[in-house]
Length: 433
Ligand code: GUN
Ligand code: ZN
Image (cartoon, rainbow, N blue to C red; front, side, top):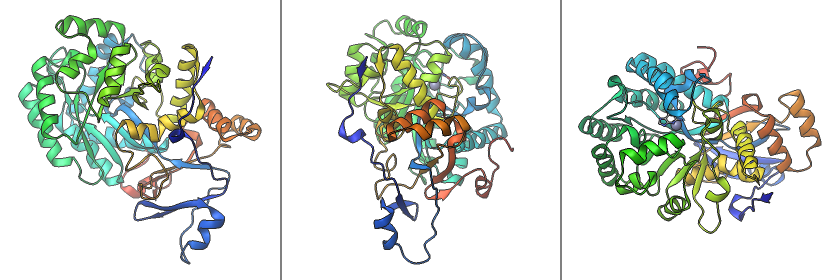
């Protein structure tokens, strides 16, 4: 087994008795309690979490909010699963009230799992973006999302056109991008569902608005890769389809990349294009084993984040996703370091999404999105935590045994949003609505 080596940036600073000072939604100070507490003005409110780990909120680098309620749907592999299940769920989003309900459920579920930022698909309907950003604004969450572009190889009810897709996306950028913490992503579903003209229009839109994201799927499943080769015979491979249309670069984030070759990984590195590794989804759909070790090769590292890919993903929990990433790496003959895995779920995800100047660490000046993890949340985890001899071992146990139960509290821009707090933001937590 080849161990992963940890570069300095990925190393964890662990304070046994630490304090994080939050003011106006930002982290102002951080350090050992003995140093920081005496500096606090009298009367400062203190939330105490003894025995817990407090870290930056998790970052979900790829999800589909409209697929929240169809998680755990039995079926075939990618192309069949999309046709048989996903498109029907997305057709229901034509109803604005349904989109609003789904947005609230999705965001509540993220917060219950300690995830404070997600890059997510909406659907082809422009109001699906309004619904999500509206709900995210109520919570003051940093969310990145966009209207799906899809003009072929999909049900009629889910298709747009080159013109309407471009116009709606441009209008939504104007309405939402940079409003509060919302960020827009130009979102062609994947190469099979957009013709050359639509991909070219997406590239043109990105040149007009270069500070937004691009978000799509890439090289997830072998049949899909073969289909793209048939649809775009003049291109050298799947990534070349996007590259040709100007859709590679920093803030371009592609889910999966399971079957990328060395040349494509190098192109990702050279252009700053990021990959969202979605291990629970890849296992659920039988898509394959992402070459994480190769993607992170220090000679030409690719920006990689961890994604749940809900609803193909089987959990909203980033700790559980870290656990699955470990198993996928094992199947490829590599032992994924638990601290590197934690990095991918936090700061590494922020780097992949190019938002590490806002979130992903507890460094002063960053936004105070925090998660409080309880290593004693379940009897088995608690017993294992008691024998852990290092923070690395404890993080690993949390990733293998943990799920939403380990999240004691989540803070968004410094505000607590635990199960008892979410209603303060105007809608009920998941499971109670
Ligand atoms: N490829 C294109 N659309 C989708 C989707 O909704 N889920 C997954 N996992 N892959 C896709
Ligand atoms: Zn996806």
